[in-house]
Image (cartoon, rainbow, N blue to C red):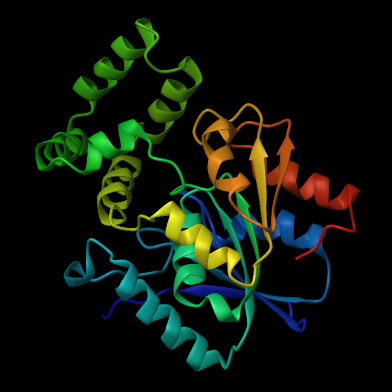
Length: 263
């Protein structure tokens, strides 16, 4: 089976949206947000690789931006899509921003909810870039105890917040979850961006970019995104009283209260 991005289509409206969910989710996690947005959209909600029914060949891993762009180009050609907006949560932002970077003339609008890929996260870089650390993470798939003890020591010495450790423990509490962590972190490690170049691409027209961020998010802290958001000519930030896990529900509630905010 070749590499392919599986998607589900919601709605039949004239405005096209490509949606990319977050880590550990599926395309179904968009339903509350899409219900709040109402009619007028056709949303192609993709499964990320290593999630749902999308499939990535070993030959295509780690996934490179050029290979992802080729698959998205084929999709756009197949569906006859000439312009579209982008909607992404967390890890899905790596896919959405690749689309924006590769097809900027076709992108009308971008909504990024707690986007991953726009700030260098020390622990992510440590776990994925040195080959020996990728081995440590790989061994943790079968025997997570040492990694969990290590996280406990970091928490004890206040190197990382307790809420972030609880989040990590939840993501490591089954072999299936640990395998997905390993595959996603290592498999997407080359989906990175030169933020200056990315800002220049987004500013060229400019493309409107809206950030929905959680004030209490310890996974994607809002403070770490400020430099990039301020560099955008058509960027705006909506800071919601939420953490990371519940942010999609808060976005849906915000949209119901603010019908003027639409993709």
